[in-house]
Amino acid sequence: MSPVGLSVLIVTYNAGRDIDTCLELLAASRIERPYEVILVDNASTDGTPERVAQAFPRVRVIAERTNHGFAGGNAVALAHATGETILLLNPDAFLRDPEALPGLMAHLDAHPELGAVGPRLTFPDGAHQVGDAGYEPRPLSILVHAGGLSGRFGLRGLYLASRQAGGRQALDVDWICGACLLLRRSAIDAIGGLRSPMFLYGEDVDWGCRLRDAGWRVAYLPGIAVVHLQGGSGSTRSARWLDGLAAIYRLRNAGRALSSPAFFSGPLRLGFTLRALAYGVAARLRGQPDLARKAEDMRRFAGHLRSLRQ
Image 1: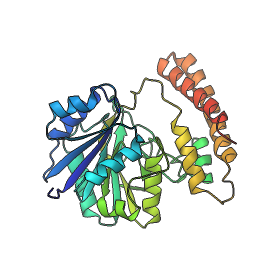
Image 2: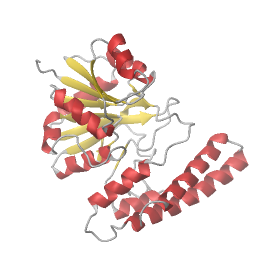
Image 3: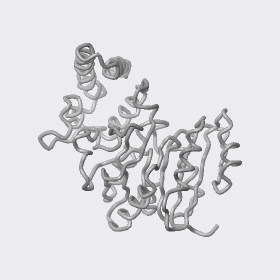
Image 4: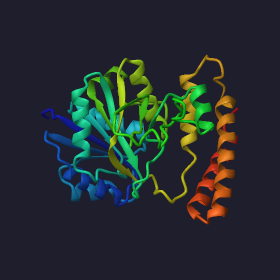
């Protein structure tokens, strides 16, 4: 197979109709270079691979009989990719702006020191989706995040706060969410590929930190927006992301002071509990159901942290 300029890697698992929208908007993007789309399906039971193969003949579909997880599925796709630039794209990440992907590629091309770039992720209503980029899980970033101080007084928390993601200038970060992540192939090679000890959640944090370890910069472009459903802004959010984050924290802080799981979970549990109280009071005073849902999410996250191994 002849090499192309860009390989788009998509991993699906019971993706429903989201993947149709994803692929349609990808095709409508103004990509002025040869590209390929490789879709690895992680043993879906809803007919995703068959439907995609029929409706999108340009897409190379690899139907796996085993669920390899997010990192494992992308590793399978990467083995078949020929591009020098690699885009990881979730099936529920929508390139509604046809200039979004060209903008990401142009920035990566213009800065050879960058190993990866990513956009600001938003919910369908345009609200910033916290968790689209951030910094290495360290004791200080845990405390900053738990205290709700990300972006204040120059402090860096686990995630970029919305106040940090509201500008136009590129920001140096440690990692970018894998829902829409553009990488240089040589940078991927430098970190040994796209495998990760995490099955689901935390792989993108792992990759970004390893890129920084290898001397590459990682850039977040808040001026480019991509819609990411993530279940929708009003739905219940899974707490499983905390498991992946805890695993990354243990991995990145092994042998260091304050590296115990208790230090990871304790400050976050307190922070979530206080936020649950604040959102609950605000929901009652303002009569806003979305604040009540946020309060319930915070309570659930705090409860989940109690189940982590101490």
